[in-house]
Image (tube, rainbow, N blue to C red):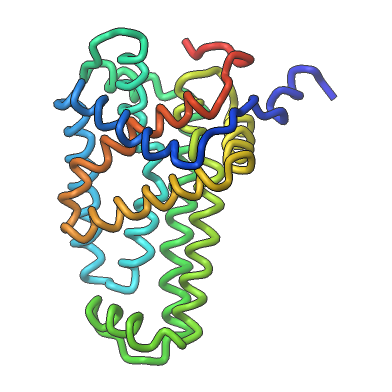
Length: 261
């Protein structure tokens, strides 16, 4: 075993936090939004437009819609890279600007690219699995998204609905544990994807209640944003993205890892 390989299998130290601390992260994220409204809202607008494009496309192949929209949320951690950088710059006492966010995307370190590719694959796999579940197990005639909502509300004893919910919940929990702090950690510190993911899992394992609350808040804000035909993402994406930076900084003791240049 080489000494250079060992660090990738050793997660960074994490701190324990109060159960309600995620509520403070949202407040800090909102303050960062106010400090850099232009570039922050631009991130939200672009992601809202992306979500609207997915919604429009899947109206023609509606069986893909539930998986596509939930998969869209799965890749959120990497889409917020520029927001992490804006919060990082503000924490350094600088005035966060759009140029900082663009530079973070251009810098695009290899670990961040790898994480993005993994999230994309996870999202795509869930889209296909979601559509397959409904094709195989849904016996009711469902010809539109409205039919799906009626089915979900009125026929929840159906096996397919519960299989879909269970698979989606397990998949989302797994991805959340691996990525909740790994993306901002990869932006901030010179660590590889494996170490960042292990650190993220440790952060969740050491703080199960606050991280469950954080996951619930993210999901609730995402659902509300989708209910507004994606318009809500213009505001919620910047707040969640900035808040995620503060979650990372409070949860992870990154002193053992060198800064990423």
